[in-house]
Image (cartoon, rainbow, N blue to C red; front, side):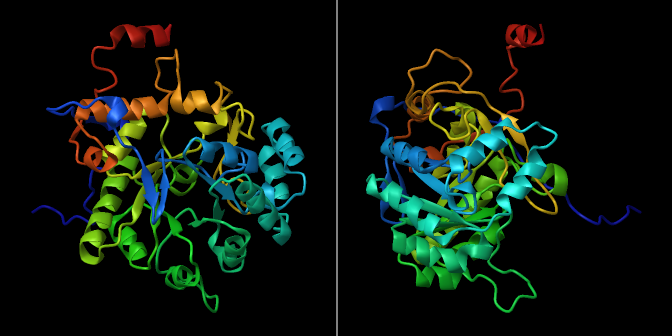
Length: 381
């Protein structure tokens, strides 16, 4: 007699394990529409700049929005805690590896200065750029109305794992339902990776959902907590919730794959998995204009009790324009992401992101190694 099973394990897939199947019809890449919408705000390119201090400061936010993307300003970071954030960033960048986490714990323990929240937002808005602010749940009740009043166009609430129901001893926790009713601007929340959590969050009235737990290049949540779902499966499941919710209500909640994207193929697979947009973090720190100057660190690294991030060196590859749009001479997919997206859509016969989401995916763990003997040989030499 076979023993009963305590759990049934399901197979989940990441970017390296799947491949996109080309279409029966092809489309000229320059005729593809890659626009991304959050409620009634339209962005020419479907890329979000991560709300991390090494990625976005006001100057970078202005430039990134000029190129058509959505930048998120980290409103629990150095930009809103220090009058001179550049000198603080220099400290983090130059600190010895053995001391950097302790230094960051000290730096990030400083309180948020309310006037700096408004100041940073107003700088972005005065330049004519769209501004999204990223808040943590603990500060959202206080800072969200303040950010809206200062001119923020979108409010993002982020935590390692976000759910619609939270058990706590506090008198009254953050209610996304109340927040969405209180604010006039769109609300994006994250992060989630399951169908059920995504559907519950959508029912609170949010406008966008960030998908991904622990896949970021500088995040160690998966190593420390063992929590996470590979991004292809996570995106597929959350996109299914989006479609069910849309069918039931007529409201469309944008799915934004957040983390784990290294090269153009990863990005394209995220869209075919159901994403409406993707978040770039470490990719953007390689831009000359990024505040991290070729360095990147996880948002949970400064935790006072259980750090879940690390500082990494990404290096500087070139301008933001080159990384996003090319032209490029590199062959590894790390530049001209928009060109990669348009070309992938073209060979799949997709004229817009919605059509690209319907493209077939196959399980293909050999997609990057099949026939690549000489490339693999050169990498080992």
